[in-house]
Length: 198
Image (cartoon, rainbow, N blue to C red):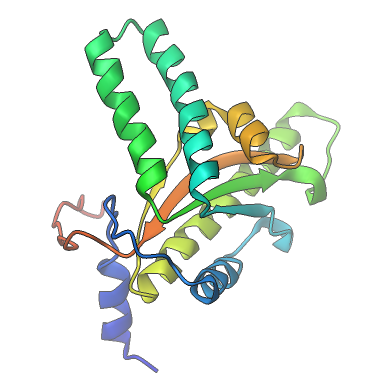
């Protein structure tokens, strides 16, 4: 068992990695990462998280293109200059396509408590999404334990219907986040930019 100091050092050395080697991540490693992610705490222990793993290049490409179309429409509505839109779209598509593994994380409310009033419905939803966020962090730490890099992005929140349609997700799955996972192609720089505790 690692020492307390070693565990703290491990937790503090996880960094967001955005560039990956093209090497595939073994299925057994992915299975271990996802299994560890499910040990996150969750409201009522309902485990409302759902994972959709994409490694197939053609699916990643189609997903990237459809997400990019929605992103472009949003940027145009914001009156972002066309040159800037093209740059952002190219970067967005490349991140999805270049990542060896893309994991879309969704919340599923079908097993959560049901209330008749708006206040408790909202709170139940917040509890479920917080649970899903816990699983997301656990996923990143599990990837870190395997020597993999990863980064969390929220773009599915802005295009949930696109993700549901392209990936053929069940209707009860509401996309919340997306993770790019792979072996790092860049050194994990340890930044000291941490706000002080208050």
